[in-house]
Figure 1: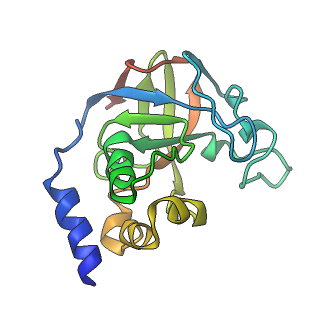
Figure 2: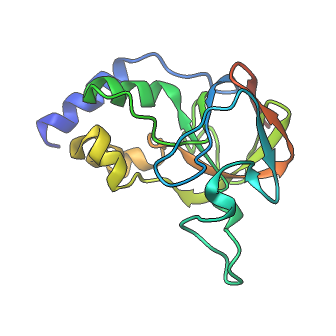
Length: 182
């Protein structure tokens, strides 16, 4: 492994771990349009509309064969400790646009595909669609960070986060409990 990637791993491994079963929502976000972010006080999650106010409903990157937006990518969830980590490394306060920033272990061992998670009064289900990061993520946080996130051993850790679909409608706000439904 190149030295820069080893350094990233060492620094991340030294950081405090996120809770496993019960955490909290740190921030909610919707993307009303490309490269726009809004941080509502209360976010409504809906099985048909996803995060209400987010562009997923009108324009997404994954569609079903019938042309409807793919519900497996309705909600993007990221670990806030990881986002703060890469922000500090890059000297950037860029928000990557994830719907929910949470303090919860998002790794596949903790949240396997199909597990349900209560966020506020809503319930979401972890999707099988991987969030491996994109060119914009690399632009804001660096190519080395993206390479590290995409290492085979790191894919199951879901360092970039995960995608989920809304199972049960409800509202979410910063400070709400995030609870794995086991």
